[in-house]
Image (cartoon, rainbow, N blue to C red):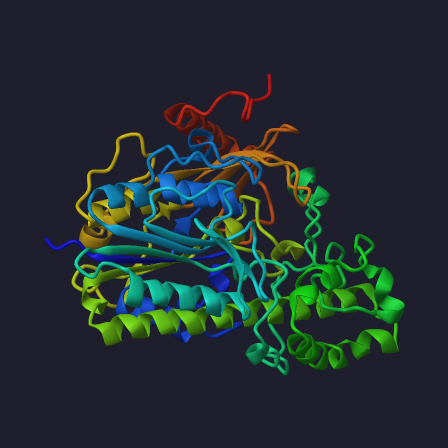
Length: 494
């Protein structure tokens, strides 16, 4: 069988609930939906650690964080270990990476790479190559696509199969949209999630310690694009004056800054006219956040369309496996939150769209559970390359070709206690129940995802569910043994 080309498109913090193919009621994504309609959508795709660098390391290696070494944002990724790009390269693929890397080390396994330093910037970003760092004027999502297409069109060896990893920064915080989208959704009211004003009752008290609430934890200028909030300036007491002024804003050209101010300043006048109530301010902040977030996604969708169009025009669409995913999900106000990290559904679930003519039947919908550790084995098997035994993940091709189930349960582990007040925790999820172990407390939470899809009530203390708790605890311990999770990462009580 001919080796397929691979176009792997990775975004950052893209929530499933903001993609049309997943039933979005808040925005439209026609080009992403095209991947789904011409291929398939995985409705039960999850990450094993909902944080940018750890998730990216698991995607690359097919391994859980405690084995690949990328537990948090702080480690430098060990590029000496096997990764799917490295194995593809060794098998004759020409490999390339453009965009966000965020792993604190130089990429390995790529014939060509052009990456953003750290998170990178939306406006006039720097890109690092093996030859040095260069600043490019423009918007980062467009530029990443420009550089991707340039390599595909002008730099690759057309006699070899390619594996191109196009990694977008968007829609990562601080949600700076391209000028062409400043007005998108401005007259719309984005629906509020039913759990926006969650009080975190009936679950572990560690949830109350979060620092990612729409109602209190935004930075007024950095997140909400407000330089003068008048009588409402004290609603976000954490705000540090000048974060926006000293970041994206200073990178803008005079013309970009003028367009920005012309769009946002008139809209901020409502905050200067009168004091808003707490709930009014929460709702105003949610709308500002969501609209900018969705504007960043519109830029992604545009550029996915450019990539798909190029495949069609070049005659390569039939021979190319296209994958679109994010490094994790995100909260769009659910539980009153933005950001990710928690093992709750909105951030553990991640989008996965796949198009591969002749293999993925058009319009397919897969309900089987898969995880980001499965991506590397899948791409390797698609290329006819043996999957290393040490990879924790499993190829998804049996799901695609035969409708098989490859996982009856999944393991998740968040290690970092340094960001957004999110306690360290791990746990297991099957097709109905989820057990979370907040091991710094220590405490368990147990959810019935069928009866309680919003995860508002833990059953761990309910005598009627004592048997279920025991079953899930047994599964949890078995999975930790299976993956040889060191006891220091999640010791049980006693």
